[in-house]
Length: 127
Image 1 (cartoon, helix red, strand yellow):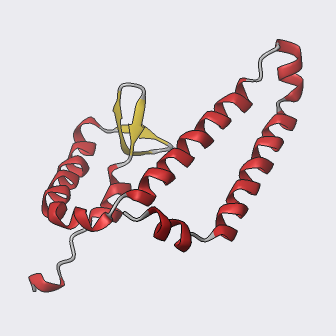
Image 2 (spheres, rainbow, N blue to C red):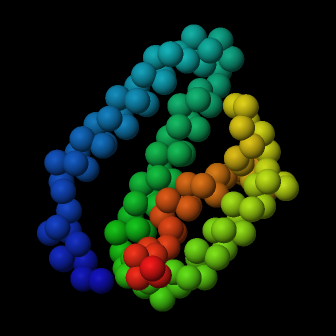
Image 3 (tube, rainbow, N blue to C red):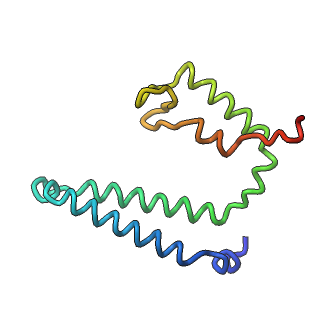
């Protein structure tokens, strides 16, 4: 991708708003956990949130350079994998908040139904 074109087409107001909201959120977390941080000498709430913010910004940066049209070549395979994951929820899924909808792998858990929103197959031509 052309970096110059990507930078030209970015919505800088949106980026500024997100960064301001991230800063406000970090400030609120610091304020809410300040007494804990002072008494224990650990501000891990702020450090953890900062880590998630940096990780999220890295994902956004990588996704800007990714050409999503490449996924069209893998649409059928991704759809089938997602159907298998949705079926796997019935057998190996974890229950949380009164519903069985999570698959846990190690310390990470995810909802295949969220991927189904993206990978749904357009079957208008199937009829």
